[in-house]
Figure 1 (tube, rainbow, N blue to C red):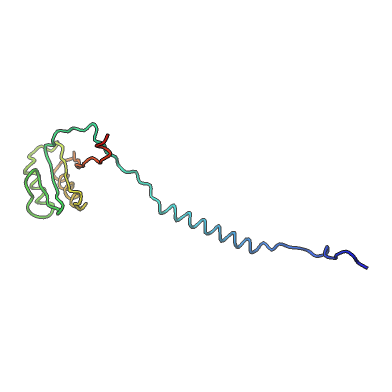
Figure 2: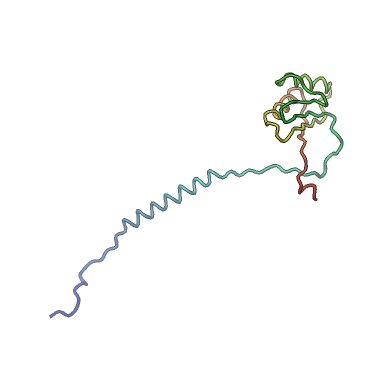
Length: 143
């Protein structure tokens, strides 16, 4: 008579194929999501401006752009559309001095294209010292 259990002869196996499938699926998931995260992040270093160490004298030459895209050279409005009337007005007001500082004063709601048009016109006329006027933020004025 046999009192003991006869299971010692059975071979037990752990089937690893489903585990491999799960691991490969997880690996593909993590590789794909980490790749998408890296492509969606852009590292941009923004320019900084401070109100310290500036020449507070009024600039000798100013080009202003209002909210509607109208240009003013000095205090005179530029009549006509496009870059050519703007270049003529700049040449007329500036005379022959191309070395002086030019300040572009644009409304905050002015389309970017109008600012670029003013910069392009000034560059074509011969000005190379351009600056864009800004107002200090509340944190700058508190310091």
